[in-house]
Length: 343
Image (cartoon, rainbow, N blue to C red; front, side, top):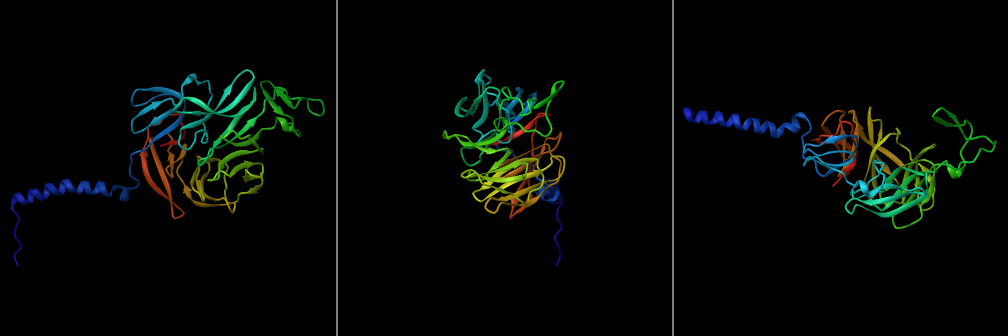
C-alpha cells in the first residue's frame, strides 16, 4: 500500500504545531520531571522585622507586620496607640490569626491580655501581676481558648538569702545567681495555663510550654527532666519518649487524635514527629534536610524558608511519611522572622 505524501503546506502546519505544542507539554510535565512546582501562596504571613521593609506596593513598615504575598501588601496588624507590647512568637496568635497575646504595663502592674486584631481592642484580661513582672513563652492552643505562658516575677523585693548575703553576684553590668543557691519559690519563673473564660491561671511549675494537645486537656512542656506531658485537670506528669532535639521550630495540631511537631536545629537536619498523646510517645514521619531560617505550618503543610532566598518549600504527611508538596516564591524582609500563617 502506498503512503500518501504530505504537501508542503501540510508539512509546515505540522512543524508549527510541534514547535508550539512540545514546549507546552514540557511545561505541563515540568513539576514531575524536575522537582517542585511553583504554586500560588494563600493567606497572609505574620512577620517580625527589626528593620523597615518596603513591600512591592511601596508601603514601608517595621516591627510586627501582616504580609500578603499575592497582593504584595504589608500593614501593621495592631494600631500603635493600643498601649500593648507584643513579643511575637509561634504561639502569640490564635490559630485563626484574629487574636494575639500582649502585655499592658503601668507603674503599678503588668497585665497579660488578649487583643482582637479586627476590633483593635483588648477583649480578654488573662493575668494581672505586680509591676516588673515579665510574661514570656506565650502559647495559644490551636483548637480551644486555652493559653499558657511563663510568668517571671519581679526581683525588686527579693530578700537576702538565708545566709544573709544577696542571691546575685554583680560584676559590672552583669548579675549572676550565686552557685549552689536557688531563688525562693515566690521568685521562681513558673508556667501557667488558663482559659479565656475568666478561669484563674493554674501553675504548672518550672519549664517551657511547647504545645497543647488537640483537645486542650494536656500540654507538652520542656523542663529539666526533658519533654513531659502535663494533664491540666490534675497536674500529673509523664515523660514523652521518642523525640530528640530541643529546638522546636514549629508545631501543628492535625486532628483530634494526632499532633505534629518539628524538632531539631535550624542549621541541620530536622525531624517531623507524630505525637500520640494517649501513649505518651512520638514517632518520626521524616526528615527535612535543607537548611532553613523560618518554619511554619499552613493548612497542614510544613513550609520552610531558605536563608537569603525567596523560595519556600512545603512538605505534607501522607500515610505516615513525609513527602514534598508545592514550592512558593515569597519576598520576605532580609531580617524578618515568620511568626505564623493566617487564612
